[in-house]
Amino acid sequence: MLGVFLTGCDRPEPFAYRIPKESRDVSVPGPVATTNTPAEAKAPAPTSGSGMQVLPGMQEAADEAGTILYTTPTDWTELPASGIRKAYLQVSGENGTADLTITAFPGDVGGVLANINRWRGQIGLEPATADQVASFTEQINIFQHGGLYVEIDGAPDSIRAAILPFHGYTWFIKLQGASSTVFENEIIFKEFLDTIEMEGHAH
Amino acid sequence: MGTIFNFFSSLKLTVWLLAFSMALIFFGTLDQVHYGIWHTQKLYFESFLVVWQYPVQAPAYDVLGWIRIPMPGGYLLGGLLLVNLLAAHITRFKFSWKKSGIFLVHFGLILLLISELLTDIVARESQMAVDEGGRNNYSQTLREYELVLIDRTNPDYDQVHSIPAELLKSGKVIDVPETDLKVRVVRYHPNADITRDEERARQSPADSGASQRMGIAVVPKAVTYDEKTVVTPAGFFEVISAESSLGTWLTSTIIDDRFPPQMVTAGEQEYEIALRDKRFYHPFEVELIDFKHDKYPGTEIPFNYSSEVMVHHNDSTKNQKALIYMNHPLRYEGLTFYQASFANDDKTSIFQVVRNPGWLLPYISVLLMGLGMCVQFGMHFFKFLGKRSH
Image 1 (cartoon, helix red, strand yellow):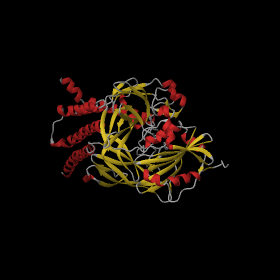
Image 2 (cartoon, rainbow over the protein chains, first blue to last red):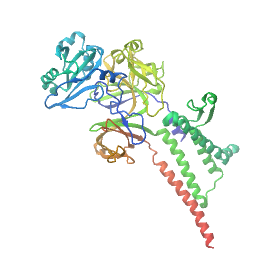
Image 3 (cartoon, rainbow over the protein chains, first blue to last red):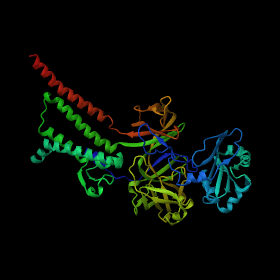
Image 4 (cartoon, rainbow over the protein chains, first blue to last red):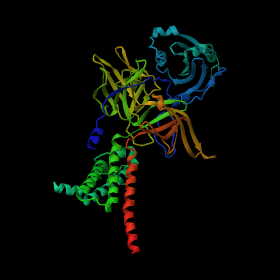
């Protein structure tokens, strides 16, 4: 029993171990899961792979950015947009789905290059330099405001996105998912961008 | 030698130890209000000595705040009670059938004390959250943390190099296991908020990763034992290779899987660095097929929570379907899964995962004690009946 006691008192040590491959579903942080328990309230518990908190001020900032209006393309599914997401749509294809999310943040959120490289990292690509960015971006008009259209091709996922600076905020409209589904819906995505309006800012 | 034995086997010692136990439970219960159950258990019952101090929140603290009461902790009391009982049996108790009931009760008590010590040492509790339609192959603790460097370069598996948070003391340099890297703990905060503050981030020790890219800064705060609050540690860590520094990184349990990974580049090798709740990976995945949250009709009062799960083991012969609900856990591969909680508008079920190899011992000991009492009182009772009939 003394042996059990002494071994149990071992100091923790660093160690290494193998796990099955994990995929990182990296996206803009979402709000902490609310927890209800059968008896008294307990500390909020983690959700699978996403138990984190919105950074202080993020939710308020997202709310202040305003409301975006759009027309959901035919055959696309509109899903509940919770927390700091302004919209969440999904389209299916033969090889998988692609998700369209719309988010908004005050300021420039670190700049175009930082955000593009964050997206590149999400689909397993190396960061691009400022010079390289011009080769996969182009100017675009959304709601009569200048924005940037971004094309990032990867495997198995790709991204088509628009970055729109608007009245002190930066809006990110991003379609990400199975590459073939993204390519098939590229024109529809561009048409979707044409339907966008910012509520209360009619020109 | 004889005096020592007499001391440890004496009934006086038993009475003193029981009195101290009552005092320990009393003061522990008082403190549990402020410290929460987890911390009180560690402080009072998984220790050799504890000092109760007059709580700040109690009335007349300015007059009585100096009061400190030291007392033996649970391990000391439990250990001495065990020694006392064993010593008494060796020196004073002689087995006879007339006292067989008492022997059974004492044996059950000895087993109970041993089982509690075993549980403290080897039992492990964690939580597993699974989304409906999703799967999870790991559970995590809520009060233990680890700094990890994850190598995801192998196409068949990921390699996790873990440093327990107990080792993360400011200024310490720790070898990263199975690598040539070291981690220097620049600063570790057991609890901290994360905020967007470009100026503060620029002045922080971090020169790489999310801190600089996203202007994230740390605001340390006091550790809380309130069970309704989540503690979120954060730290600045410098990763050092044999040749040079690979940067100083801010990590926090808030900066989790939803954020882009923070990648430390060591030559041609890349590691994701993160601070997170300590994880235990299992050789199986728990798939949540359906979570039910039934309420009494017309009310918001719950009467049932249940999770229909399918466990997919690496060895498919061990796959198992189960329904987990209150008082009906799943016992699988030496683990017990209890329906603990839920989240995300009933879309996520949270299980308490308990590993306790000695879980049967308390049942056996209580059974023995009950049997012993029945035997002893039964003998007296029938003897009494026998006398009466004469």
